[in-house]
Image 1 (cartoon, rainbow, N blue to C red):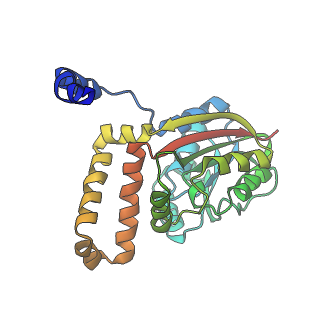
Image 2: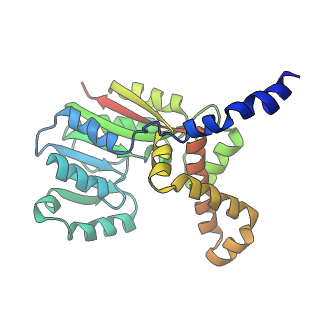
Image 3: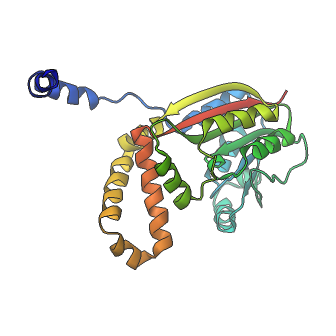
Length: 269
């Protein structure tokens, strides 16, 4: 049979060369692409930006440092705000004075209408129950001519329905949050103009694997979590186990092409 010939005769003749070729990097883009997108917007120093779901504040400080922006950084988690405010004490006074941290979310931004030049939203949309409500809120706070730079992860056709449900259950994802069509409809309904959509596929996963082996480590951890769940549930509890399981699956699925990153650059007319 043809597959026998290909498997046992043809393929072994190219196997080593094929593997060597796969060891060559495809130069994946890394998260700095988001800052490059902002740089190309040409925002003036002292422009106002809101960092949605700022976490511990790293991106807010970058926006203030690299572009001289005045950043309102918001997050719904008090622990993140506490850590970010503590970190602000460690940065240069000039940078710290440009960044403020407040409680807020993608659907409730504590800013006046038409007050912001940039909405920066990284890896938050998958936790929003109604993406349309979030993009409407982005449009509300933006000045005419202002931009959204948003990175999110979406499902691809390779992600099975059961896999999507598992991710939603253990990562706190909203039911429709991974559907790219839902995001597209939400953007269209907001009235924001699509300047560019950058398909990153699994490039961030490749980049992190090449940098520090994170993807391979996540795969190893996933195998251990699945093989002996009682070991880890007993030591760290069910909730922590489920979070770790979901996080490992997330990184592995990005490497497998079941999930894909995308950047949306939007403009308010």
